[in-house]
Length: 415
Image: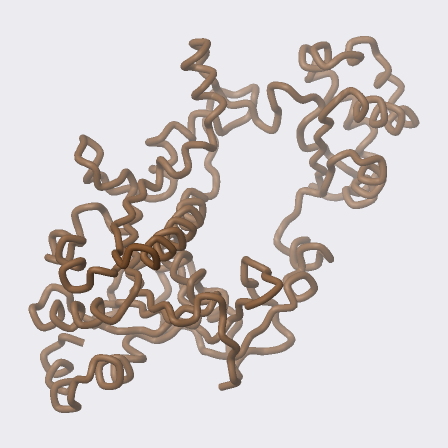
């Protein structure tokens, strides 16, 4: 193993109960930035759904990917330590409490009832370690109410909070499915909330419980429709790629096979520059229907058809360069291969990624570290661990158990 540099969160120990996306991504963020992250897993290997390794979420175990496979470094548990522990047993709970006593943060995205039902709620953890910070990312939060114990998955959570009601094409009443990106959004909120709690702990000497409702963390996504309803009584519906106060605004077909460009013209000066560029292939662009913002909003169907009579003569990247040269926001709608090869987004080109594990391939692409700091860069320190890979290190070296005790735990299925 190559020598690593101390990251900005070096010295922080995080206990990670994350499953699916939000929790594992939160733990990965701490690990990439230098914290020690200990993943708690079931001794049976059935520790819930995790987007780790190959296959669809829930179909691949953490042991299914070889450490030299780039997929192992893309998984959200990369670089973490794994402790397999039966939290239903009294011995497992005692081991867990010893770990809490020497840790800084616990992260979990179970439903609100899980940790208390295990006898490991914040009231218990804070007695074990008054400095512990517990971050809970349940779907709807732990505050008493009719939604408290709801169990959701990303798509159903977005529907519960009304986000699905505005996803779809402007000319259709049928909502469209999208990526369940409430998970990473909530993880980002939680990351900064934990950093704030760590800073508060430095001043007060006390930890705290951070209760995050993933749905509420993401509801700002539909802030405008909500405000419009509360202030004006209007109920928003799907608007596709359009925007109420901007036209043109959308995705337009270009000359390539299923190739599109995203364009947003934000003000009258940009419109006039855009109109002059499009005029060479689209005479109708000077139509008086498009002269003002309001007239463009009133005639968007015809406007979009007129614009596509111009955009279809270029590839998406050709037109992007033309429009950006005139300071008009535009970029190709990219697929996976486009993203890998794009000079702005290619992870090796953009992030100067540091992978300190000797098993990785220098010829492969890796998901980079999110934050780029002038001092204290983050780094990828290793692949996704197999279940219980660090049991001995954690129990013997960190918690001080004897070898005989560890063997007994293993015989009894505690680890």
